Image (spheres, rainbow, N blue to C red):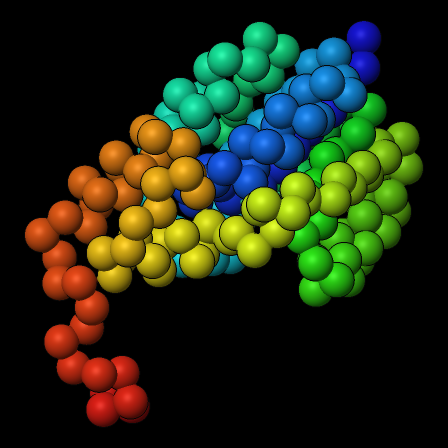
Length: 172
Ligand code: ADP
């Protein structure tokens, strides 16, 4: 049985991530979506919420499970007995960092391969960061994120000003 780990921040999970899960779940018998506990990013949702949102969004995939993790991604993959780490490549800009990480992973655990899937064209412009920014400013992100994530974003940003009341350039 071949298993793989799809790691990331998933803050929050987007339709691009779901598309990648759908495709990776056909390549492997078992896919663990690993929600990294402490990425060096400003998080909107805490780990519990990110895991919960991903679990709900991916409930239809029988061979997919969502687990939080801390520490080195490649060690988590190894502890799961995963044959591969799956990552998505949106643009050339993703490639360099993924290449660097893949070399790093190989240096630590050469038995864990890194498999990069090209993002579907529909989602190649999508990032969780962009989604959060659009949602924060009151924009509609329906279709770009799963339904439950859309609801969570609305709940998070409802009642907040649609944009900064003072234009940014005046703040600097
Ligand atoms: P990280 O902080 O590790 O980059 P992300 O949650 O941003 O975590 O992304 C997790 C993985 O999903 C990465 O491999 C990333 O390239 C991929 N990914 C991000 N956005 C998309 C998308 N729109 N379509 C497909 N894959 C994506």
